[in-house]
Length: 437
Image (cartoon, rainbow, N blue to C red; front, side, top):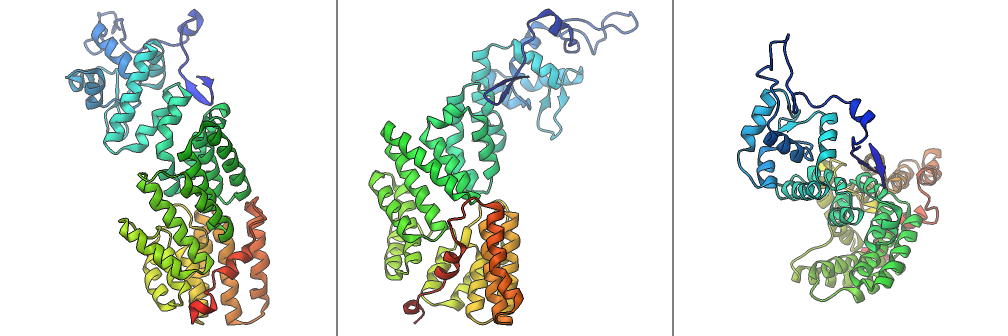
């Protein structure tokens, strides 16, 4: 297989020695005899129609009869495929969904297919699987397009959803398979790189990619990309509880969003709501929450509603809201929530209520969740919360005092963002005296 921009392309068997190293597909264009008795009924040669059919459908890793009918604009593919499988030219797919060609046979057939026809069939397969909700299978076809910018166009709409579901390594793999010059020329792809770095707590790296995306977006006069970048920077400072910096980027994002772009407007108000919580401006947060409900939305799905209750001193309400979330959290299939994890919030609230054993249990769970989600930030804050619990159990004990350096060591071990100090989380997560009163 030849390499092109990190993608594997089919080797084309055009030279004579290479062609001789591979037997042609069984029965493909010639008869096979059994003990000199003439062609076997099972292995008789394929017709020209069958050969042409196999060349075209070879672009499909799993050959589904309905997919073939739609892509080729014909009927009766099921009958042809069943006959080819009966005669040994195809295998039943391992998952039972259609048929498969032997990989070497498929490679040889794809090399003979017309390039434009192959590209058209691949795009049809992407749409066909997408329409049926099989997004993973659809996206596996994208890198067969052999056009880097077209690949990026297909991937970009799916990057936010993959990040939200915790599939950060998948997005990173997509970006690494694209040529560097393609990524560097796209503010959206640079934004995606920054978001990958943010999700794994590499905050300085994220800032650098956000800055690069801003430069390209300004050059291209792409206001929507500029809004996305500013929102990404705002989320970075929300993750690390730096409300002054977050406020700057929330304001900038608002200036770039068109009034008719309601989803982005809602997202910006959600960022402002959370930042008001971090600022201790709970009355403003309350007004923003009312505005979100008028827009048909609500608070962001990151336990900000519980943090609002915490800021206004309603500790028992926080426990009631978060306990079921923490108990049913599978800790996979989602992105890490930084300091907003339900277990981290519960550990803090239980410590404030003087329930040291419950606080310690939630802190231990938070650390394990941080490890499962590959989030050093969550693990580090888990140790801080553990320190709160241990101080309640035995003030100034060695175990309690060790929790702080352990949390710092954990963060430095995995994160390049040493400037984002864990103590910010420890201090600013506490309700203000005015709110508690």
